[in-house]
Image 1 (cartoon, rainbow, N blue to C red):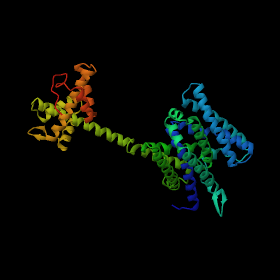
Image 2: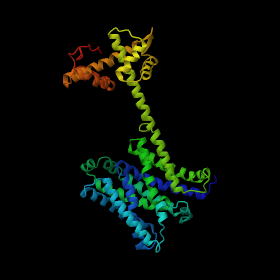
Image 3: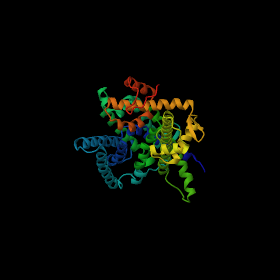
Image 4: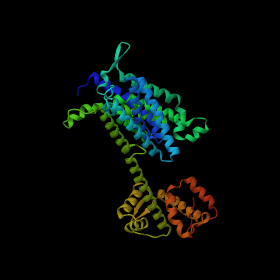
Length: 435
């Protein structure tokens, strides 16, 4: 792979664009307004076209003013349709952005012969050509997109830094923000204006359609990795920067693997972002698919082992010797599970030192007997509580207690014991084991 100065500038432009979008995307995701980013990125087209028609040039200042005005109007229109039309917010966004986007496309097509405006550039971006359009910054020639996107990133960082507390509170709880004297609606309109300005700045880099990936995907991925806003912002910025850098590298390398000549860097950036998001969905430590499967399997295994532990304790109470096969059959019948699952539950008790082989059966170890006694005690305390305080019939308390015994900590168990201070037996006449 050959690397040129042009490639470095493309990566810099991509990173600036992606991070500027991702910074605002965090608040869109938290507000459950991801669709609003899509709406504004499409709806600003009329403002862009009108700004071109009025000025006859591609002046960045005029573009930003047109985008900001229409972005603010988009948020206002969505709120009006949602409030006065009494329709779902998502439907309101769909109505507003599709209408404004269609108007914008008509204006672009009409104005394309009179002004320097390429609809393809607006939709798909031209990041490969952006480094050739340079401006003088002191003694250096720097791509204009770097100056524009760097300024937008600085603006977004400044606004988020100054209004961090207000944006934080109004994103999580607008009603609380209002009671604290924070104008939640003003914060929303400020955010929408920044999204509109950032979207227009990103037109030449990744286009109006692909900007959505950088507005939403990094923030959504970060939200899977952390529940703290500060950490979420930091992770989303890193995610966006890595997606942009790897996207350009992939645009250079991947086409050769499939026999193609080239591909669009902006599209590959969005593709890499989507791929990294898919990995995050699968591998996130707390909210990932794999971790959830592992946690559920571990929880199910723990519950099965505790049920097996309780069964051994009850048989020991009744002084009923049974073979291993009978143990498996009893647990399988009681829990409606397969024989293999029941066998693994008992093997798990042996591995953990809670049970040990005894002739053709199993018996509790001292540690297992202590654990089993507390488990059965919890079960019977719950049965007594449900029967005495909630008036649940005696023949209906067992199944509920079976569920509750696995999620009861020692403090709750002692609280149950306080409520059943005079009860020595459960509703079925079985002794409640001592603490």
